[in-house]
Image (cartoon, rainbow, N blue to C red; front, side, top):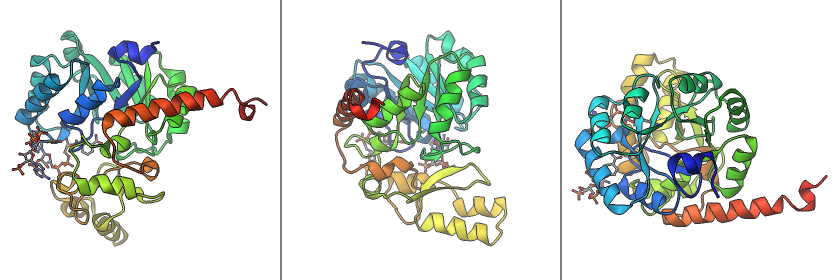
Length: 317
Ligand code: NDP
Ligand code: NDP
């Protein structure tokens, strides 16, 4: 069986593992691709030579399609683009920037391009820029987040109405039931981040993986709205920002508190006090660290069960 997303990427299941800084290196990407989804290397935290290493190792570890996520704020983006083209990476997901900038160059080289958005307006802009699909990411998502705070439940049906290209839903999705809900709302596939952080193959620090497993409802919040809104775990660093905001700190003062490399400190080095810990609301549903292939398997099994359940009386009224 195939749908628009499995056909577009030539994969078995319409499940995409989000490109996540410090958490999704080649091992996770290859494991997800080998399991029938689309694995994505998160290049935003990689120096150019590190990205090259990860692409080469990913190619050695899987003969299936995989992708690279490219946040457009990345300082050495030209070098990343060169590496991606040189090594014929089949898929690129761009985010945090204007999709017009790189889409045509990547497509000239036969690369499938997807852009991540958080609103209908930007979904339409991405379609106009010629991307092959759009990821629409709702307010529940971890990390960088849209300013309008539109939830996945409200965002997906609206975007589905407004664009013709395939649509991937993200934000709050980590289970098979959520995949079915997203498809019901009009998406053709899903992008899952947080649940894959809690995988054996994720390059996240063990301390951070445990944070995902231990998180309860209400443990993450959106912050840093003066800079770029980002959903973080409410740890000591988060509270420091909150206190500064309550005391009327300026944008520059917030920037100074943030400093540099907070995400690495928290997610890669495992400093749960001073680091920035980017996870989504769905963390409250994640209960164990599993091999990524097993996570894909569980999601698909739960999806099929949920589909079957729709034949029962509960849905028949
Ligand atoms: P390898 O298993 O080949 O090597 C792991 C490397 O990462 C080692 O050099 C190790 O340094 C270092 N490392 C491991 N844990 C930590 C940590 N908590 N903090 C800092 N450094 C750590 O890994 P890969 O093939 O997966 O990675 C190749 C390169 O890519 C490495 O340089 C790695 O740091 C980097 N990487 C970057 C990611 C990112 O998102 N930017 C994600 C994953 C890896 P040592 O043995 O000296 O401790
Ligand atoms: P900071 O400016 O605080 O720090 C830069 C980090 O990126 C450092 O840890 C540095 O590693 C690493 N890095 C990798 N390559 C380079 C490079 N060429 N030049 C400078 N630093 C580099 O940024 P953040 O950690 O907050 O964000 C890093 C990237 O991730 C950005 O491109 C940002 O747009 C993206 N991002 C994406 C998110 C998303 O949700 N998609 C969320 C947050 C960030 P080292 O410490 O080893 O020098």
